[in-house]
Amino acid sequence: MIHQLSLLETQLSVLHEVSTQMMQENDLDRLLRQIADFACQQIGASYALVGVHEFNNGLVNCVTERQPHCRPLQTPACTYMTELETLIESAHPLRIDDIRQQADCPLTHAFFDLPTPFLGLPLFRGSELQGGIYLLGREGGGHFSMDDQRLLEILATYAAIGIANTRLSKEVARHDQLLRQRNESLSLLTKLATTMSDFSDIEDTLGKLLAHLLTYLHIDVGEVYLRQEEGWLLRLLFHVGDSEEILFGQKFIRYGDGPVGKTARTGKPQYDVLPDCHFCKHQVHEDGQTCQFEVSCFPLAGQNDVFGVLVVGTCQLQPLDQKEDDFLQAISAWLGVVLENQRLIESRQRLAVLEERERIGMDLHDGVIQSIYAVGLTLEHTRMIMRDDPQKGREVIDQAIRDLNSTIRDIRLYILDLRPRKLHEEDLTSGIMRLVNEFRVNALVNVNYQGPQEGTPELTQSQAVAMFHICQEALANVAKHARATHVGLNVWKTPDRVLMEIHDDGRGFTVNDARFTLGHGLSNMQTRANNAGGEVEITSARSSGTTILAWVPILNTEERAQDA
Picture 1 (tube, rainbow, N blue to C red):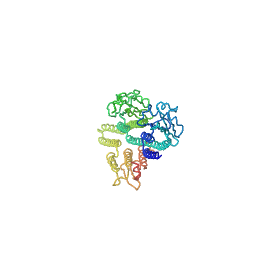
Picture 2 (picture 1 turned 135 degrees about the horizontal axis):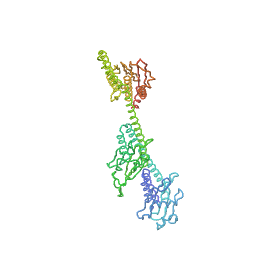
Picture 3 (picture 1 turned 30 degrees about the horizontal axis):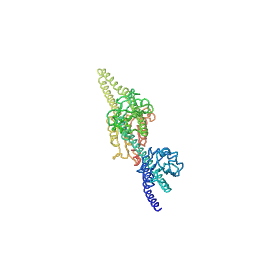
Picture 4 (picture 1 turned 90 degrees about the vertical axis):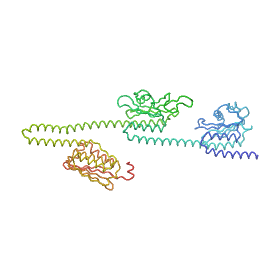
């Protein structure tokens, strides 16, 4: 009796140590191994089988342990587990003196030659069946006792908690991985948005985008094909990867040919496998077979058309999973919309250039050319009257000179209006002074400028640009339409605003009528001021000159940060 109590105390002490380890274990296989080792070493089982179910559907983990003198089981442990589970119909332990007497266990009956005791216990966590512990055979003979059963019940309690902990740790790790992937995706999207914010150079933008994708998704090869504006050809824009060899061996692909052409024609992703891999570092798999290369093609499609194809290639050792595939499809759709917008912008720019050429042609024909033609007629008339009335001829020549000077002035105004101006790394005051000096030289009109000595550091860059363009448009209108001899330009500040006033002594106009006759200039000034948070007021009357008053607010620190 004393010996049994001492043995039980030893077993409980070891169980306490094992249970502490089980509570800290995060690997399910190691946890099951600890349970099986304890059952064989402390309870004295010849064979211990421990398995775990996933969502009550199938055995996903199973380990087996046996005493050194016992021969290995003839079939896999999972097969024995499935057989032994049929004996237990409830959550209670089951002890059998001889498992060979059970007709439901033909495998164990065929394997064991001698009477074999059995002790089995299902593992429950609440109402959820997690698995089971099954002991076969008793070291030194005999049967499993009630003490063995109670010890196994205690072990099972700790085991159930340990299994739940490992599942929770695995779930937390999975969520951490998803969160990390999501953060990396958001970071990539931020980089892509930054890359595509300036779409002036398509090739440079797509190159940066593809470089981000290859780094983030660990892709071996990336290629971008863009559709030619005329015809049905896709041109390889660039190839990125360790190998310089392109995936399909040709720089031009027709619509409908191969996975790239089919992607462009159907607007749906296409997938292909290249039998020989020359594009990644693996070359050969662990089993000695040649590496195969998986190619995925995604359409760069807008609302109405496909503008190109994004192609990525990965070794089948690291294929794209479904989330990465979905992510690439989303990026491709986004990029397709951007390409479509860029094409529309280019079309509008070409149309604007054609319209501007037509306007300039009409203005030159109706203005400068007619004036030069009139001077030519005047000079021809002068040649005829010089013999009879030299004084009259000289007067006509003087008038022709005045007409030519006026024509030269008109040409200068055209040059002034056509010359692009921007606010390049200078403050508003410096930019306005530059405009004023150019205006004085080309329009031959006196300008009186007054502004703050320290400039306007209170304005953000976008506000300064808006005020600069408003001043530019106002001076251009004076040169083209006002026939003014003097312009006053004044910039000043109040505690909450920066204001600018441009006044001329020209012929003036009716504001409502001018909105239809002066093109987009007035509305552009109003739009620029509104976008900067300000306003433009235009006052004019015929023969009374024109005054343009523009202002923008002075922003606080938080508003300046948002504007930036």
